[in-house]
Length: 606
Ligand code: ADP
Image (tube, rainbow, N blue to C red; front, side, top):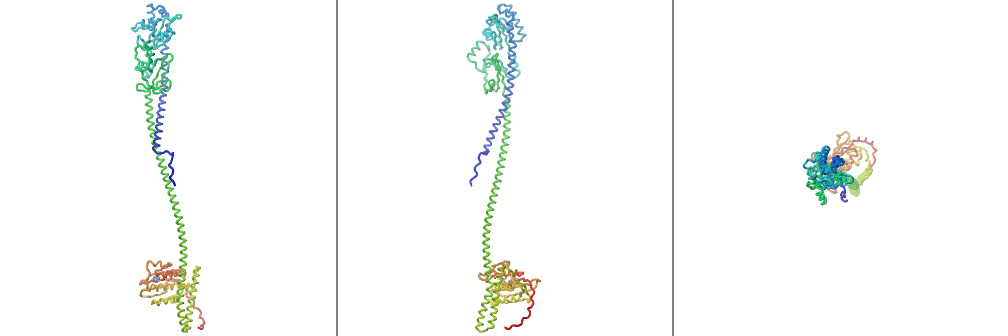
């Protein structure tokens, strides 16, 4: 019987469970955080793209609103006349006023007219100190583009005004020749102010990746990437940003979500930066959504999920512990049941074993009982036959003497006695046969007085030898119904026991009395002056083989046989001690009417 194999693959120890739970909980918490974050990001993203669309729209609207102005002005006859005669002061004055008026009406930034070389001929700000008239702009890209291709667009900081703006230029042509260029400078600062007032972070970078518009003033003229040396040289030559100081924005890319969506870290904040290219201007408009609220939401959700996971984990642990405990209890119960079953099996086995032992013992006892019965019977036979045998021996001895003397009369008397004794012996064996057949003995009227006399005669020699004084008081009417021989056996036993009990002491008196106290029974009392009976022995006297006598002196069968005989008669026998010493045996015998005296027989000659 080996130990049960260790359980495998069933959960392992509590440490494993806790680790597993912690891992699952962490996974769930992390996943939840991601979901919350993704959702918040999606919200910001969709709002951001909407804003981008809106701002891109406002930019193009703001620009296109003024794009027609230079075109219209190139066809203006006064402008064309001025271009034809640049030195005509009067014309210039006329155009100046006209530009001033138009600019005021259109609410554009500046309107001005350059000659074919790029020199300012007339301007809407002719009257101001920063007037463009007389200044040279031939190096500015919008002029160069317009002179070359008819139209030019350009963002730049005004070299004269130091104000940023968007320049839209259109060339006035005559045949294939450029007469001059009309320019409108659009002020974008109001747009920027609008964004800033909305509290949103919007930024427009130009082709150089320089932030030319920004709702945050400190980001303006910031660079997303450091300009290449060539780009830097070009900026200087065109004075695109005039005196503005360019500075790196230091946006660190944290995560790129798509080509136009990226998470950047700037000024200790994370932003979702959405970008849209504006192909017309070559710009890119950026919308920056602050991720701090998203992160806050993610943190909140994580904390809540962690708390919930902890609660669930504790619950799971509790349930697992409970299940383990229940299982342990069930296993204990099963073990107890198993132990009980085994104990019961063991008990049954032992009971069977003991039963077998008992059966064996019983068989042994039965055998021993049979042997004892055999012994008892042999002893009984020997006991009963020894008395008449001894008497016969005595008679034979005396007969021989009388025969030698020739006393034939006494010889005949003795022979008759011997004959009587042998007949009695035959009766005893006959009785034993009856006993063996378990049939009750004969039932006929028996004279108690006569039977006592015969018994006394049988034990007479030993009584006389011991000098026992015998008295008897038996009415002649005392007859009982039974077997004379067997009754005689009873008396012989009682008389012999009395003689034995009186052997070593004085006085030696034996009395046999029959009284008539009961209507149905004679009470026979055989009393002696012997040792009496020990109180402890009084109940055992009638047991077979109970004897206090020395080995060889008594077998302990006399009273046992007597008890059986008296009981067969329907009577009883008991022992008691006499008040003044000695024992008494009281025999109750059923009464029988004395038989009618037989009719007188005719005398026969001896
Ligand atoms: P046994 O005479 O062979 O011993 P009994 O059955 O006749 O067997 O007697 C049993 C015992 O009863 C005796 O051994 C004796 O102790 C006791 N007993 C019988 N009769 C008397 C008596 N008259 N006085 C004292 N004891 C007696």
